[in-house]
Length: 317
Image 1: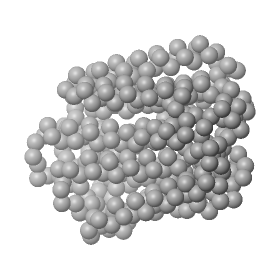
Image 2 (image 1 turned 30 degrees about the vertical axis):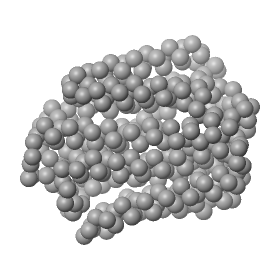
Image 3 (image 1 turned 90 degrees about the horizontal axis):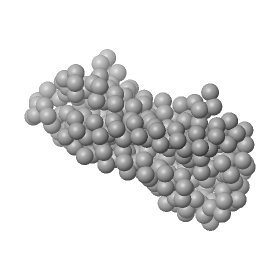
């Protein structure tokens, strides 16, 4: 039970739903054969390896955060209290080893070093993030936001590669998007979702730093709220949240003749962001920052699983 709490199953579930939701939508773009699409073993392995790296990242993050968590989140302290430190570190490396083996297989199977490179880079960056960059000014926030953004890109690259193997086709159905450049659609949508995830997660990381100031001070961290203070950090995170809303609607505005119902999940996400913008200026306690953090996570979830909604439009009109 404590191990399950350590790997943060809800976060892992969101990762899996994001990848399968986007993959399920792309499945309707072209007639992918069963060994190339969302129901293929290769795609399942890609999802599993990504979730494994995320789980291992959660373990190593808590491993290096024991001192801070004794102050910030004593009720959630697991390593050193319920799970021995050496067990945690060994488990972290075992999970990463199996994820790396999957990456080796996928790189061989897909004839691309992309999976090997991304998996290896993610494993090492999560280690250095937890050990060092997390307590540096802004760089840790940008790093973890970038790793989050890679998730939809992995899916886009998988299906783009599969589409290229199918060769030129006139049977692509990218409804409900009236987009002219169909051959670029998969990568374009993946990068749009990645940008959305990056911006929102960057704001969320800054809010988390405001939530954890007391413990971070004990570790002599140089996070944004410690260096600039709460007021400036709120302004910066608020600007970033506004950028997420504006960026999403501006991006979709370039797609002519788009049906407004397509924007429904984006509107829901924007609503959660607006709630955060209302709560942020008056936030003055750990519990309030945690609440804002939760709303940003809901905004991210609504945006990242929007392809499921688009696929339902594709099926039912």
